[in-house]
Image 1 (cartoon, helix red, strand yellow):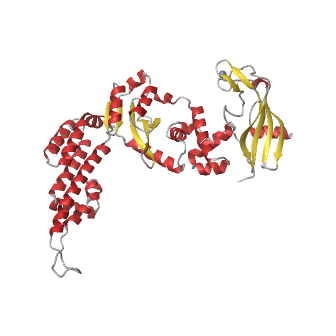
Image 2 (cartoon, protein in one colour):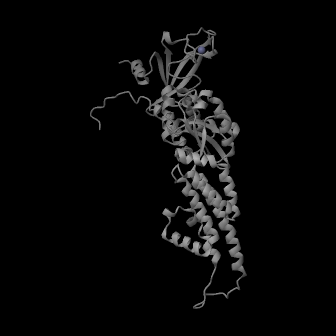
Image 3 (tube, protein in one colour):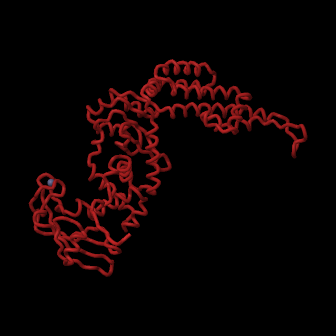
Length: 441
Ligand SMILES: [Zn+2]
């Protein structure tokens, strides 16, 4: 077998002619001079149609290919410019690489595959490329596999909208997930009505009509945007968020009570320094409240023994805080009701909170009234935002594993690849190419 034939089968590219190969001692790289077969020449790189020459001069261009052992490999070719009727003047299409890139198809595929499983620093070390290049390759590969992200909007009926932070200092992305396929369908930089409107603009009127349920947290911008754009959608709110509001209200109540008790403690006569005498009891009531935050916030079924006794103390000593705890548990109970009785139970809770004479809960009562329909819909359809929150977690892990992203678009594309079905499309290059190894274990 001649050396040219060996190189051709190692490169595994169709419609290619090997003209020459030189090894450069300085940069320890193999430069393979290649040319396309006649039928492949003069095609538009965008539509793939045959196009006439733009001029007779050629440009010498090189593409990085997968390494041969320790040495880097470059394909070098003289290429023309073509003038397509639809797309204008471009350098012609080549069978080994996509348009506007200095890497071969297999090289980019390998980088994208590794980036899914490793952090970007490791990928740049293994592939011997710049750290920033990993991000731009991810974007190119994503755009090639799925140039139009709105294809995922077909047959979408139940969606979840949420925001997730990706960096310190209130940097957020808006994530839209399909509840039925459990995949991310859209990611937008920042949050707010304008960002979510971009998603709505990408949907056709028919797709908007199809959406029947939207789960989200209580953010007003999501509510207003959903009401304005999705006429058939019923809004659901996650139980987790609603209960967390109650926990917040209870905590405010706990803190205000602590302040009162602490002032009372201070008013007590000061005792002498040193160990207390036998029979002398030091009563510092405020400390009991201080350690009760977790006991009050936790679900009763998950309490430890000490937390249970702490809760018991609160019940005996501070009925004011304990009433707040009961109200929180009451609200949690509403989400565990059957759809038939939920309305009745929620009404009962609202009138209870309204009369409780604790300003924190009276305020919460107003907030719950604003989301009344959403709460009823959540219990009726048994739709929770838990999956979306799990997806947010996955996104956070992804960003941390990649050691951050300099370019936000690269990050969005990475999320779209990993949290959708695209992750299965990107495989290792030559994964299907069979090799027969004998005598090696
Ligand atoms: Zn074209």
